[in-house]
Length: 266
Ligand SMILES: [Zn+2]
Image (tube, rainbow, N blue to C red; front, side, top):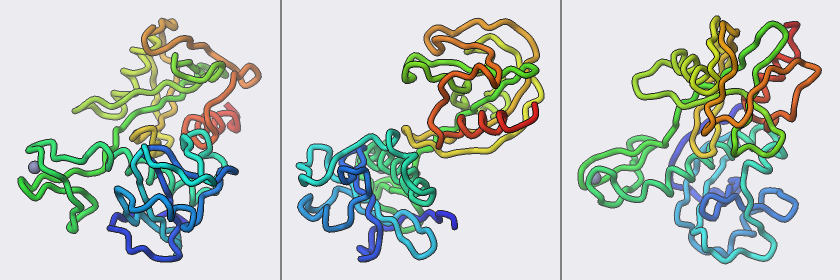
């Protein structure tokens, strides 16, 4: 059972699951459940209304209302990141896609080339400008995330914007013209002054806060002492399986990579 993405103006299928947003905030009932279609009736016509994918016969429909919309009493708006782990996997996949499309649709009202309005393209999953023919595709920003080991130790770091006590893996965006492997080596060197070797691909994850495409690598320590890049990293330390700090969200690729290392015989 996997999520199949597509992007078409909503067919208003009665059985579709509506993923409702006001601005970039998810609408839920007070117990964080996804509302049924009747909950949205008083909100009126959405700014955007697209069918965005399917799991088997279940269609997911993205509806976005203006962020200043007056909410019905039984709905609340929440940051998706805070509740993502509470949904089943097929809903999580749909919500991740929805959230990335929300950012894209809200950030691409006008053509970046000529300034005219962008409209849905019937030729591909994109927005297009009828005046100049420019296409806008959903934005994905590739970023490398690296689990570095040194013997039985793992390198974890804190960014100043993390919740207190959480440590995670080192990560950074791929520069234009750069390979993912070169990015992984550069980011670890820049952020903590460590050289790495023996990169092994782990997997990828779309992470919609706001539009990252995470590429995971395992790597081994090759040399150097920890020297923090102060504007990016607040603290970095070598930990063992017995001394691990608080880990990041369980649905994140960082958590999955650390869990894989924990379960390994390394
Ligand atoms: Zn244009």
